[in-house]
Length: 318
Image (cartoon, rainbow, N blue to C red; front, top):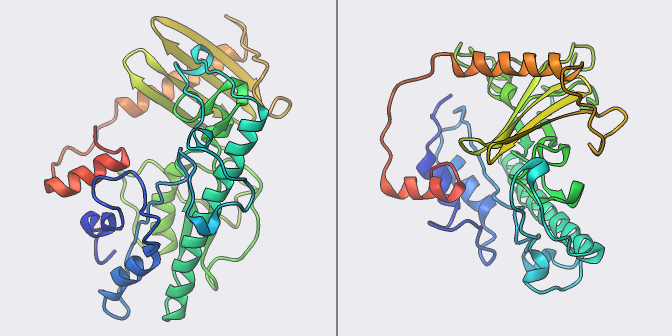
């Protein structure tokens, strides 16, 4: 696509060094419009807008506060601290009233993000552009599911199952695809296919056929949470069966859930040496081995210090 993504320009929507958008300058739509304003008429472009919120603390600008929640202290906007991963994780439950308050504020954050994105799309269309818009999240949030909060502590459905919205009036028909699992890894290939461009062979994913998604056979989905060697979890979603293998401090626990009858993942079916644990683990190990054993891009690139710090603020650089 022309021009190629310019991280320095895209990341300018963030206050340098901050992990939050400045509420006193709700000018994200203006900045995105300025970015597009630098293009020539007819130029094709790819713009990546990263809304870092909703993340804890679940604050919102005054204009969006109180839609569902009441006023609360800063502490009331923070989820409980969780230690560990998966079945080894634990947190002190703050009480149902606090959890309800957290959810309400989280919903207000989503509403704020929806408003910002709506402004961007509406104003692009007002200046004669008809953008292909894809909205998704890199993860969900836990609010007490199996005693956990926030994210980064498990591979529960509350974290790994996220929304996906695709909109391109006149090009992609409207509708709801409530069928097989769609993988985020398939989006890069899909975007290029929808734009009529060649898909590089190095891409892991394949095109999402929105018109036939309900008819296609489901594909396995790999899940991974890594905090360091021997500290994290791996998972495999195969149809309605989900395997999660968590490891921490030399201990390992494998769980299998049938999401069709146990959507909250409360009752593990895993029995050592018996199906479905045996064949699910074999398939997961084989798929991860294929991924880790494959050749990867070995080129290098150089970024300036300011861009590095902004990538660090987003969590992409350690």
